[in-house]
Amino acid sequence: MEYRPRLEQAQLLDAAWDHVQSVSYQVSARWLFYRLLQDGWLSAKSDYKRLISLLSKARKSFYKAWRPDTLADDTRAVDGAGQGYRDLDEWLEAVASGQVFSYVDRWQEQNYYVLVCFEAKAMAAQFDFYLPSWMPRVAFGGDVSIPAKWKIAKLLGWASDRYGLPTRLIYFGDLDPKGLLIPESARTDIETWLPSHVDFEYERAGLNEGDQDAYDIAENPERPGTYQWEALDDDTAGRLISGAVESYLDIEAGERCEAEDARRMTAFREWWTEHKPSAADLGL
DNA sequence: CATTTGCTTTCCCACGCATA
DNA sequence: TATGCGTGGGAAAGCAAATG
Image (cartoon, rainbow, N blue to C red):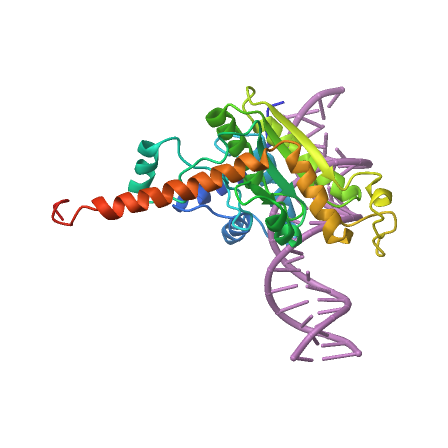
């Protein structure tokens, strides 16, 4: 099932690759389009969609040196939350490289590593409110980009190795054909790119068939028979989010970690104040 | 001046046609 | 004939132009 483009597409991809290599930062598909337009590889406006499909194909099939993270996606953030340090040594190493944000690793007392994903960016504030701050989350923004899916697979693989925990992806989105399709296509790629030893399961926590009656959700007037996540009242949304998350996470353990983190940081600060070396001690 | 509408970007899938 | 290619349709979001 190896991707073998025909001559013309292969040449186009090679030309695109040269442009990718020509700069020392990650470029977007759009940028590539204009470069190739300039070169005369493309002309019509409809060529844009053609190029996008081709670039998707190349990145997802690992054609030559193309990889899912070859092109940039600056609009979606994928990063771990709740990460900390195993011990003072590891922490001091991070201090040295200027990446410290906390000390105690929130995941050390959990039974699962959980990532929450949701369909629309418009939902972000609500999830920020109902999820513990130490939980990683990704707003898909419709169909999620290839680089974002790649980062998610990397994050889950990394977490699985570091914590030795089974990983779970909990998804929330609209109850309509597209809302069902978005996470399924994302899940397929993420599962494909996950190392085989990673214990991974996906759960769609809402909106699911039947929720519209269970929670008395108003129909989307623009498309009968479909239901928007935003139509949920705040209380119900909060219960759905918290309920799904609490079936995997020990929230109190997470809170204990947060408290412990604060305690250790305070203790360290006190110690540091007392033992702080002078600039002369450090030979500065 | 605020809201609505339209356009653009990026992704996916389905389908029919072309080709090595 | 299996695989590659191109098109059309659809969703979310951000921005700009049009509208009330």
